[in-house]
Length: 260
Image (cartoon, rainbow, N blue to C red):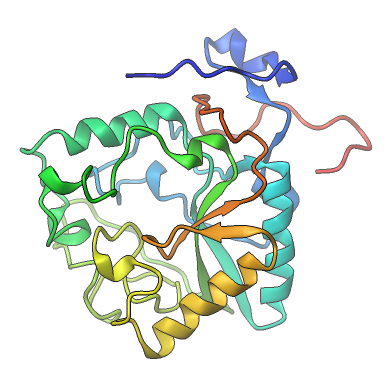
């Protein structure tokens, strides 16, 4: 089911030598644009809804198109003044990772992580309910999964494979610890409570969702209503292209004097 998207002519050829699709020069590492934004790249870890690292995530690196990265930097500057930081869970996502999600969703026997990520949703409903799709805006390079962290940031303890799982929609003090402020659910929670404007989300969690959305909207990001963490920078650099180069540190650097 792998796709063969059109690749713009201005690309970096280094990846081709390793048998991988090339990385367009319009992409950058977020850390090169703003090293203060926290990164917890979940799909490179064991703590995912598929039960382990996701195909294509070779290193825990956030890659984005340059306009999206710069817009996050502007949002971060505003948030730092308020004692908060952005934290990204996912950025560019290769098509092979999306294919991994699809294979997992079509396997009814694999419910290792159900108790945390989709306790009230049967896997047979994941496509119909919009939680999994055969393509993702993340693969176009201008979409991020992001949250807020109150500074100074406390560490997040490592996930231990096989540890008891807790419902992602449980109260914050009960679910897996995350140094994010309370957003009403954990990240990647397949539940209607994750809908950004779900009326059941009140108090501090509602204020935190509104703050995140408001600051990002001011810099050109549009929220996906079904996921409080999902934002796309518009206009997109590649609105019709779904890339499949792996997530890893870029092996090239901008030419001297070029903007990050």
